[in-house]
Length: 272
Image 1 (cartoon, rainbow, N blue to C red):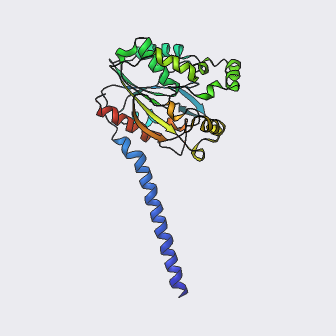
Image 2 (image 1 turned 45 degrees about the vertical axis):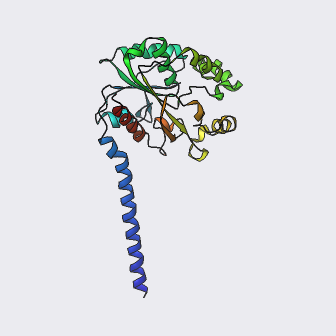
Image 3 (image 1 turned 60 degrees about the vertical axis):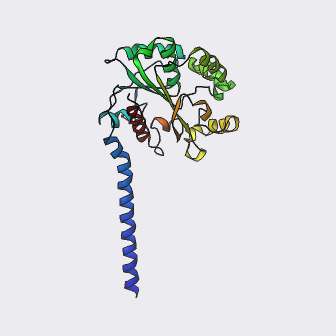
């Protein structure tokens, strides 16, 4: 009887191991297989970063991009990406001017812009005010503060912006965005889309907990930096459970590569 129980237990352990291995393989397939079917777009993709963003940094001896692993995994499988760097702390007008110059240096007639956070405002300004409309086929914004964020109004935020000379933060208040939206109309020739992100506290980076709690009390659902209600612009492609940093791949709790692959698929279906 004793050996029978031991044998049964061993079979149970073996079954558990096989289930675990199968689940790991399925998880890997979920990450890898969609990328192998990355759609072919008519136009290349420009990834526009947010405030205090960068094109590439070195962390612990390894290089990382702002849009972490996006271009590396999807670009190697057929999608063409460009990641221009604009002045990270400058106001929208300065950042947008640099974006225009960089996009006009690219070959080809038009591009699809996928912009995170303040990068969405840069792109909208560049299209409406700086003549970039003829080079842009579509604009997809992710976690962009189209109606501002109350965090930018806080006295501590304003003091920090003055001390560190982060002029960009003054452009992110709700009042500033009311004026911005009046002066920066959409161009009817361009497809405007958005991805709306929010996260609960347990799935938010701990560094964002204070701002997440403040925004939850002030504005409801948010991604730790931007209220969800502020992120809607044009056609909403996806509503995702991801904090502000997870949206560009800086989290193990969210598959950002899969999100961008879905965005590419949507753009390809629209003929872009």
